[in-house]
Image (cartoon, rainbow, N blue to C red; front, side, top):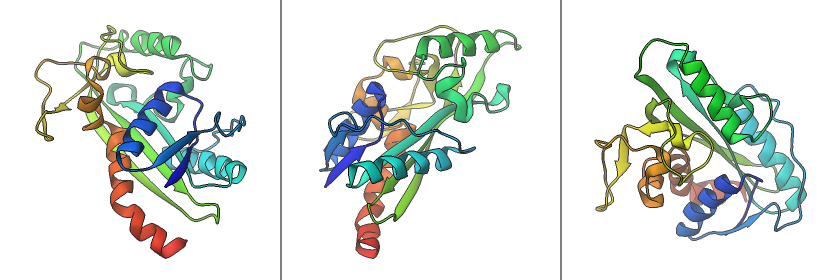
Length: 212
Protein backbone atom coordinates (compact mmCIF):
# COMPACT_ATOMS: atom_id res chain seq x y z
CA UNK A 1 0.00 0.00 0.00
CA UNK A 2 1.22 3.51 -0.79
CA UNK A 3 1.41 5.58 2.40
CA UNK A 4 2.46 9.15 3.07
CA UNK A 5 4.56 9.57 6.21
CA UNK A 6 3.46 12.82 7.82
CA UNK A 7 6.74 14.04 9.25
CA UNK A 8 9.68 16.26 8.44
CA UNK A 9 11.76 14.66 11.19
CA UNK A 10 14.50 12.71 9.42
CA UNK A 11 15.02 10.26 12.27
CA UNK A 12 11.33 9.50 12.64
CA UNK A 13 10.92 9.14 8.87
CA UNK A 14 13.77 6.64 8.77
CA UNK A 15 12.08 4.50 11.43
CA UNK A 16 8.61 4.73 9.88
CA UNK A 17 9.96 3.82 6.45
CA UNK A 18 12.08 0.96 7.80
CA UNK A 19 9.21 -0.65 9.72
CA UNK A 20 6.43 -0.02 7.19
CA UNK A 21 8.45 -1.25 4.23
CA UNK A 22 9.14 -4.50 6.09
CA UNK A 23 5.37 -4.81 6.39
CA UNK A 24 5.07 -4.53 2.60
CA UNK A 25 4.12 -0.87 2.19
CA UNK A 26 5.61 1.83 -0.03
CA UNK A 27 6.35 4.99 1.92
CA UNK A 28 6.53 8.51 0.53
CA UNK A 29 7.60 11.38 2.71
CA UNK A 30 5.94 14.79 2.82
CA UNK A 31 8.99 16.23 1.12
CA UNK A 32 8.85 13.68 -1.69
CA UNK A 33 5.22 14.61 -2.25
CA UNK A 34 6.09 18.32 -2.09
CA UNK A 35 4.00 18.95 1.00
CA UNK A 36 5.68 21.47 3.25
CA UNK A 37 2.97 22.42 5.74
CA UNK A 38 3.57 22.00 9.47
CA UNK A 39 0.21 21.57 11.25
CA UNK A 40 -0.01 23.22 14.67
CA UNK A 41 0.08 20.53 17.34
CA UNK A 42 -2.62 22.00 19.57
CA UNK A 43 -3.75 18.73 21.16
CA UNK A 44 -3.21 17.87 24.80
CA UNK A 45 -2.57 14.17 24.14
CA UNK A 46 -0.37 12.19 21.77
CA UNK A 47 -3.52 10.79 20.12
CA UNK A 48 -4.96 14.24 19.43
CA UNK A 49 -1.75 15.55 17.91
CA UNK A 50 -1.25 12.47 15.74
CA UNK A 51 -4.75 12.89 14.33
CA UNK A 52 -4.24 16.61 13.71
CA UNK A 53 -1.11 15.88 11.67
CA UNK A 54 -2.67 12.93 9.84
CA UNK A 55 -5.75 14.91 8.82
CA UNK A 56 -3.79 17.87 7.48
CA UNK A 57 -1.23 15.86 5.52
CA UNK A 58 -3.78 13.35 4.21
CA UNK A 59 -5.90 16.21 2.87
CA UNK A 60 -2.85 17.67 1.15
CA UNK A 61 -1.52 14.38 -0.25
CA UNK A 62 -4.78 12.71 -1.22
CA UNK A 63 -3.42 9.30 -0.19
CA UNK A 64 -3.43 7.18 2.96
CA UNK A 65 -1.31 8.88 5.59
CA UNK A 66 0.43 7.88 8.79
CA UNK A 67 1.29 10.41 11.47
CA UNK A 68 3.09 9.69 14.70
CA UNK A 69 3.09 11.84 17.80
CA UNK A 70 5.43 10.55 20.42
CA UNK A 71 7.32 11.61 23.47
CA UNK A 72 9.09 10.78 26.68
CA UNK A 73 7.37 10.63 30.05
CA UNK A 74 9.63 10.80 33.11
CA UNK A 75 7.89 9.79 36.33
CA UNK A 76 10.03 11.95 38.62
CA UNK A 77 9.15 14.97 36.43
CA UNK A 78 5.42 14.21 36.68
CA UNK A 79 5.26 12.97 33.09
CA UNK A 80 7.32 15.72 31.50
CA UNK A 81 8.30 16.43 28.81
CA UNK A 82 5.30 14.44 27.50
CA UNK A 83 3.49 15.97 24.54
CA UNK A 84 6.00 18.81 24.62
CA UNK A 85 8.97 16.48 24.07
CA UNK A 86 9.89 17.92 20.67
CA UNK A 87 9.83 21.47 22.01
CA UNK A 88 10.86 20.98 25.64
CA UNK A 89 13.57 23.63 25.35
CA UNK A 90 11.10 26.12 23.88
CA UNK A 91 12.04 25.60 20.22
CA UNK A 92 10.65 22.74 18.13
CA UNK A 93 13.03 20.05 16.93
CA UNK A 94 16.19 21.07 18.80
CA UNK A 95 17.32 17.64 19.98
CA UNK A 96 20.49 18.68 21.75
CA UNK A 97 18.84 21.57 23.56
CA UNK A 98 15.96 19.32 24.60
CA UNK A 99 18.42 16.78 25.98
CA UNK A 100 20.34 19.50 27.79
CA UNK A 101 17.15 20.70 29.49
CA UNK A 102 16.16 17.17 30.48
CA UNK A 103 19.58 16.56 32.03
CA UNK A 104 19.36 19.86 33.89
CA UNK A 105 15.93 18.96 35.28
CA UNK A 106 17.11 15.50 36.33
CA UNK A 107 20.13 16.97 38.10
CA UNK A 108 17.75 18.88 40.37
CA UNK A 109 16.30 15.62 41.65
CA UNK A 110 17.46 13.00 44.09
CA UNK A 111 19.65 10.14 42.88
CA UNK A 112 18.52 7.86 40.02
CA UNK A 113 17.02 5.59 38.78
CA UNK A 114 14.57 7.80 36.93
CA UNK A 115 11.86 5.54 35.55
CA UNK A 116 10.38 6.66 32.27
CA UNK A 117 8.67 5.48 29.12
CA UNK A 118 8.45 6.44 25.48
CA UNK A 119 4.90 6.67 24.12
CA UNK A 120 3.86 6.68 20.47
CA UNK A 121 0.43 7.39 19.03
CA UNK A 122 0.22 6.36 15.37
CA UNK A 123 -2.76 7.62 13.39
CA UNK A 124 -3.55 6.03 10.02
CA UNK A 125 -5.87 8.27 7.99
CA UNK A 126 -7.71 7.59 4.73
CA UNK A 127 -8.69 10.35 2.25
CA UNK A 128 -12.36 9.69 3.13
CA UNK A 129 -11.66 10.86 6.69
CA UNK A 130 -11.75 7.47 8.36
CA UNK A 131 -8.91 6.83 10.77
CA UNK A 132 -7.51 4.47 13.35
CA UNK A 133 -5.05 5.31 16.12
CA UNK A 134 -2.80 2.84 17.94
CA UNK A 135 -0.66 3.36 21.04
CA UNK A 136 2.75 1.83 21.75
CA UNK A 137 4.82 2.19 24.92
CA UNK A 138 8.36 1.23 25.89
CA UNK A 139 9.22 1.18 29.59
CA UNK A 140 12.67 2.05 30.84
CA UNK A 141 14.62 4.80 32.56
CA UNK A 142 16.58 7.92 31.69
CA UNK A 143 20.18 8.78 32.47
CA UNK A 144 22.09 12.06 32.69
CA UNK A 145 24.91 11.24 30.26
CA UNK A 146 24.44 10.77 26.53
CA UNK A 147 25.38 7.32 25.24
CA UNK A 148 25.33 6.20 21.60
CA UNK A 149 24.88 7.85 18.23
CA UNK A 150 22.39 5.58 16.43
CA UNK A 151 19.27 7.51 17.19
CA UNK A 152 17.60 10.88 17.52
CA UNK A 153 15.72 12.94 20.07
CA UNK A 154 16.09 11.57 23.59
CA UNK A 155 17.45 8.21 22.36
CA UNK A 156 20.95 8.75 23.88
CA UNK A 157 19.39 9.22 27.34
CA UNK A 158 16.75 6.48 27.34
CA UNK A 159 17.56 2.98 28.59
CA UNK A 160 14.79 0.48 27.70
CA UNK A 161 14.08 -2.38 30.08
CA UNK A 162 14.29 -4.86 27.19
CA UNK A 163 15.94 -5.13 23.78
CA UNK A 164 15.27 -7.23 20.70
CA UNK A 165 17.08 -10.58 20.46
CA UNK A 166 18.40 -12.39 17.40
CA UNK A 167 15.76 -15.13 17.68
CA UNK A 168 12.99 -12.58 17.28
CA UNK A 169 12.09 -12.43 20.97
CA UNK A 170 12.95 -9.77 23.53
CA UNK A 171 15.34 -10.07 26.45
CA UNK A 172 16.40 -7.97 29.44
CA UNK A 173 18.69 -5.05 28.64
CA UNK A 174 21.38 -6.35 30.98
CA UNK A 175 24.10 -4.08 29.58
CA UNK A 176 22.01 -0.96 30.12
CA UNK A 177 22.24 0.18 26.52
CA UNK A 178 20.38 3.29 25.44
CA UNK A 179 18.10 3.42 22.40
CA UNK A 180 21.00 5.13 20.61
CA UNK A 181 23.36 2.22 21.31
CA UNK A 182 21.07 -0.43 19.83
CA UNK A 183 21.09 -1.87 16.35
CA UNK A 184 18.00 -0.89 14.36
CA UNK A 185 16.45 -4.35 14.68
CA UNK A 186 17.09 -4.42 18.42
CA UNK A 187 15.27 -1.13 18.83
CA UNK A 188 12.39 -1.84 16.44
CA UNK A 189 11.52 -5.01 18.36
CA UNK A 190 10.81 -3.12 21.59
CA UNK A 191 10.36 0.54 20.67
CA UNK A 192 7.19 2.50 21.29
CA UNK A 193 6.85 3.26 17.57
CA UNK A 194 7.56 -0.33 16.57
CA UNK A 195 4.85 -1.59 18.94
CA UNK A 196 2.27 0.87 17.64
CA UNK A 197 3.04 0.03 14.01
CA UNK A 198 2.82 -3.71 14.67
CA UNK A 199 -0.63 -3.18 16.17
CA UNK A 200 -1.59 -1.24 13.06
CA UNK A 201 -0.30 -4.04 10.86
CA UNK A 202 -2.51 -6.55 12.70
CA UNK A 203 -5.63 -4.39 12.40
CA UNK A 204 -5.14 -2.73 9.02
CA UNK A 205 -6.84 -5.30 6.78
CA UNK A 206 -10.00 -5.31 8.88
CA UNK A 207 -9.98 -1.52 9.11
CA UNK A 208 -9.71 -1.19 5.33
CA UNK A 209 -12.50 -3.74 4.75
CA UNK A 210 -14.81 -1.70 6.94
CA UNK A 211 -13.85 1.80 5.79
CA UNK A 212 -12.76 1.83 2.14
